[in-house]
Amino acid sequence: MKYLFLILHLTFLGSLDLAAERPNILFIMSDDHACNAISAYGGRLSAVAPTPNIDRLAKEGMRLNKCFVTNSICTPSRAVILSGQYSHVNGVKTLVDAFPGPDKGIPNVAELLRQSGYQTALVGKWHLRSAPWGFDYWKVGPGQGLYHNPIFITSTDGVAYSSRIKKTANRTKGYYTDLVTDFALEWLDQRDDQKPFFMMLHHKAPHGKWEPADRHKKYLADVDIPEPETLWEDFSHRSSATRDMGTSITSRLHPRRTMVADVQKADWPAGSIDLSGMTEKEKGKAAYQKYLHDYLGCVKAVDENVGRVLDYLDRTGLAENTLVIYTADQGMFLGEHDYFDKRWIYEECLQMPFLARLPGVIPAGAVNDAQLCSNLDFAQTFLDFAQASDAPEINKMQGTSLRTILAGKTPQQWRDAIYYRYWMHLAHHNIPGHYGIRNDRYKLVFFYGLPLDASLGRGDFPPSIAGWELYDLKLDPQETNNVYEKPEYASLVRLLKNRLQELKQQYGDQDETYPDLMRLRKELW
Image (tube, rainbow, N blue to C red):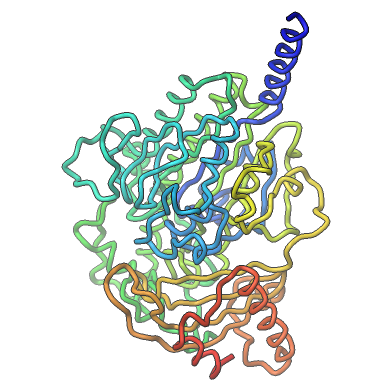
């Protein structure tokens, strides 16, 4: 009997050692937070709108400079992060697609971590239409959510989840960014401290339409926000597929929406402005300033609340064994190329911020500028740090763990390019369907411009002009010179098209499903 007791005792101690070795994982994700609006990335806004708390993660951990989204739109990106699968595999291609339930065979990293012994929680913006699953506890805002006095649904309150709850439902007094941080810290205080935790803390901010907290309504009021060099770009270099597409800050394009028009509307949440009597260029400049002031006011609250969370981890002794990651579901145009919003494969919305800290594992102050990373990699990264790489369904995931990179080491093998696809042809922001490849130097994009799937349940949109674009990111990092038609790039174009086709085959995204697209490919490929 005493030998049996000894065996059980040693087994128990071994399980405690395993729990101690496995880090807590705190995943903080904002919505549409551009790298240009994080001062650790050193963009044009870093001096006027610093983010000192988010920057702590860069100083005390690692910054990835080449982390990219696979589909730059909120719902699909979140589904990729949870599943480790491309949009065409997990089924969430658009804003109206629901994340599959537990009986559909799609991996959910939260559920896999829960099965491996983690206590799991989700707080904040979910935006996946179906009810959250895989979490021991969740408290989320339905749909897009409200900045002020928002609505929340909790896993424990007995109310069925719905992504569309009337705005007359019970509302919680306060500001969304502050409230979800309150909820997260409350859960951390009450969690089972015998288990490691996995928490997804999702902010609504800085998603439009932008409503800063009351304390930030005058933030940067006396500051003239620097304009991007490409705000007044000449689009003559673009292909005919994109030249007149998208939503712009100024009124010089021909999109369905302009910021000049939006900020003059009486219902503009942060207060409209009067641009009457101005020249078109003056209107564009004023609209840009209004947009950036509202956007950066929302970012300010996110940064403050990241600071609250980091201070909590320090105060409670959790910082040393907690992997903290800060990212966004995608990037965002802040006036570059005269654009706002995201969706395009262009760098400003393709690039995701990614800052990670785990003392003793991730070297402090490190920057990785070599490997091409993706939100496709996040799920396997979580599982690797959790020592759960043998989890069921991990073989269905399509990414690669970032742990070796985050440890400051060079992986023996790594991808040479990333594959991107945007499906929501012309929906919302007049952006054509397209896919492309980005390697360390070049970006090749096929704008096929076809309504392959009914977008947003509104029926098919009309086709748009199809075309190709190629950018040399070393010579042209701002993507202002499309070199696709230049003879000196012809052999490179052939190589990139072959590699693009290989990636499509590797990830199971085959165009044969769509006869119209195949006919177009035959003509233009």
